[in-house]
Image (cartoon, rainbow, N blue to C red; front, side):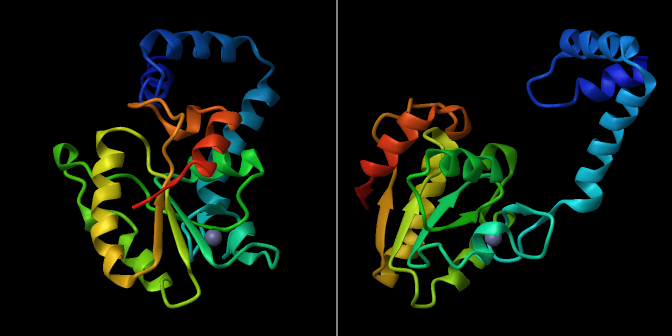
Length: 191
Ligand code: ZN
């Protein structure tokens, strides 16, 4: 019991109390349902990889977006996490490509440029990409990351925009609703 509670309590957004509640809930479930959950969790690490181009999550070598021939290959939207790809895809307003950085710059947590997929992003800017939309979170780390990318990309003379309007400052992209995100995409500003 104690082991299960302390493992669950390590998950983001789950404190000890919630972990306890979950464990008691699981205790009441039939054995096969708990097994299904455990199998699904295990499969995440066994089957799910990161796309070799954009670092979105995928069960194959390339994610469905990179592999698609229906996407606009001239626009690249840079996000922090694969969750953000999901959130922006839900708006149905964006048809370009993505690049997942795998986090944001944070000197406090010791996360520097080399810890993010920034080098891989730069290698993608080889002539096809005409616009880069920076969609990092509207918080301190997201802003720092945006500034850093701006400095890197500016000399390349590629149109550079940043989503902005309507997003709550300090918030997280993944928690924004679809309308807010759509507005933020439409209202992106040139950097
Ligand atoms: Zn991809």
